[in-house]
Length: 491
Image 1 (tube, helix red, strand yellow):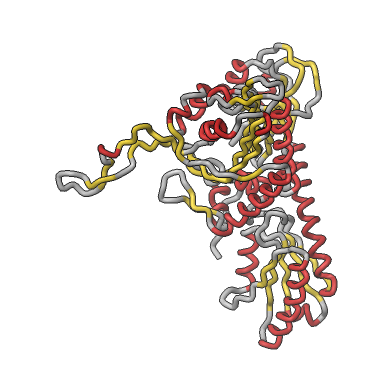
Image 2 (image 1 turned 30 degrees about the vertical axis):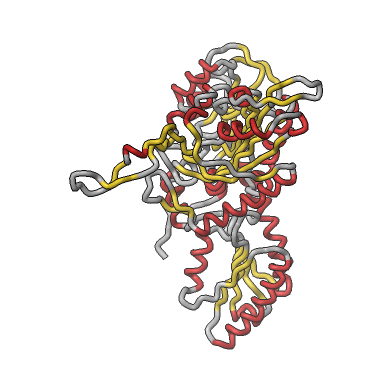
């Protein structure tokens, strides 16, 4: 099976692109900058979606759906928001095509079907949702509104990479309305905690919770909270954001409510979201030169069983044993596949499931079974164990938990090893070339942040929420600072 990948150490970007395609996750579409998510890749996204959706509902949120088309005038109502998204917007100008004139082949926009107002294809939904909320909110009794939608969005990216940055991608976006700023800020932080919990407990991906600097915050937000993860090439990836929007959108769309004190006040807002970018994060956090490495909690297929035999009698013996194992694992909610296809060799199957990152492979060989033994291979560290067939059920169940923990600990160790304190500009210039997170003092000015980005392509990934107060001097300007921030190059 000719599916060998380029090594990460030789070309990390090419390794990633090859892995996405060869592991059957996605492929490029005929539409520039867009991708086709294949069934195996979509199965992972469905698991992500299902788990997060349960978390959202447990915290009181309900799903809704809002239009994909947004009148251009809506974007013009919130100045900072329109400035932040203007360069990425896809615009609908006509609603009909017609054959070209003068016997020319092809179609063109019908000038008689030009829209009275141009429509923006949804890059994010704050504007259309807050225009809608104006009709939903009259009194404090109508608050809070806790809505989420699962949708696709379009941002006309010029440089694209599957899952990480595409012109169209899938995501969820929560949009909530509150009577007080305290409630809205509490909501913002609560949803950040949901994202961090999901990333660490299900993706096995350690993250740093923090606040974005003014240069990096969401267009139209008062504060943007985020989770930042380190990929295996040392670059940062923003894995999720939660925004405190203040009253900006309520003022822009005139969303007011009558308070308990009988005063007319503007509503306080939040928005928060994660996207199929999480798929890219999952790939780059754990995978190796042999293919995908998936944490068991998100793997579409957690266990695969492969028979090795020569005669029909041996095959029947293996089938009987496989049925027992499958029955037990399914009773524990573990997804398992028995691959008894005769068209492919056992070696081909081993390579296929290794490439696709299936956490555990159980090999039922006729010779081993006659001695009461089976082989269990784990994908995370490529080790094998020969164990008693009587113990394989409990062993497999426990091994899935062990693999999940091992992947998190391995990723955490990598991040810790590649996170360094830097105190001088000269040191910064050396260390940033090594990759990883640099903990540095910053003077708090956008000018300094922009200069560092210009000179090194490194940005402030976040101001850690759990960072300790520490007096120091800005790594670039030398001005006073009371806390270190995380600098890194990023996706």
